[in-house]
Length: 491
Image 1 (tube, rainbow, N blue to C red):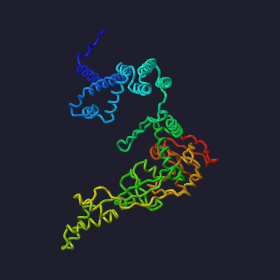
Image 2 (cartoon, rainbow, N blue to C red):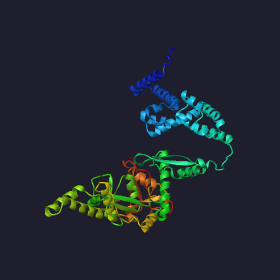
Image 3 (cartoon, one colour):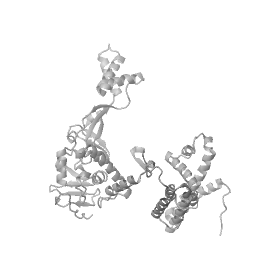
């Protein structure tokens, strides 16, 4: 048996790592037999675990020696961010691993041996962190031994809970861990977010009940993953809470949409070259105020919400210069500077209302002529897009979600415009349908399902590719009950 010589230095070890990874990245993995591919994946998982332990050990020593100060960085985490080109959150995660594994040497050794994955190691550390300090090493060892013996993560969680129960100290504060509660929402690129937190038992139970109730599959057409259903359940709960508190008669719908459009867009309605922009024509709103919304999600919300139109704009310097030139050609006695200042002052008054002149004078003190941002020119009154009497008529007719096979009650449903308002669809009873949040905002406005309301009250739903058709029976037999859908048409 041939044994490879051990690396003589850290540089030799790193060179061997890079050489091995270069080979794996350069080979054609598709040519490998299935068992060899499986071996590669298992070995790479162990290598990832060993890397996590090694990186934490080196980072701990690096921070202790304060070597990061040689490169002008105040902390090792800042050094990681700028010298290894990782994000702030990734640098914070690496520093957290270093601190955690220093406090859990048993877990660090298991990672170095490839005996446990980083995700399982994090879970075990989370559980044993709840134990008294003197019980933590023993708790780590018990859970690591159980994992090596084939216990699954759920078994480890139950074992950790039993250890915590047996070693728990009396609650000195009597708050049941209330002070440790916390929730953090980080807003990331494009308005998306990441939610993390530590919940009290009561909050956990309430949230679990909410997710179980609102996160169930809505039917055979519901192809969402469980995590996606949980996300949509949380959004739906928040939407109901916001809506029901302010407008209880609106069945929990969004209270208001602020509809922003520029003066040019207002002047050019109807129409527009952007196919992704939904134009709301004057006939589509009760107040006669036009406007636009972008994206499928916004169009879905616009089906059933109050809308406040806000028109914005800013002075066009080229247009003002052209106007000034024409005026001065007919009035040679007026200086260009005087006319230009007068014209800008009037434009400020006209465009931005009572605050316009003050804004003009303020910006002139800073050496500029006018704010670069768009200013609100007009704010219309919020309008009730679907009158209460019409909403009640839709509820009385449909009784619950009209999508075939769905029986979600009206309080959790929204009114959907069958022919979109972007295409001139009117807010009339024959163009409205009661749909639950999933079938309205996701199935219809995100996935592209179409729904048709027939004259006898039946509904047909078709998938975007046209291969699936779901039909309801004739009008419902009684309140709160809709028969099962008919079988789908063959492809």
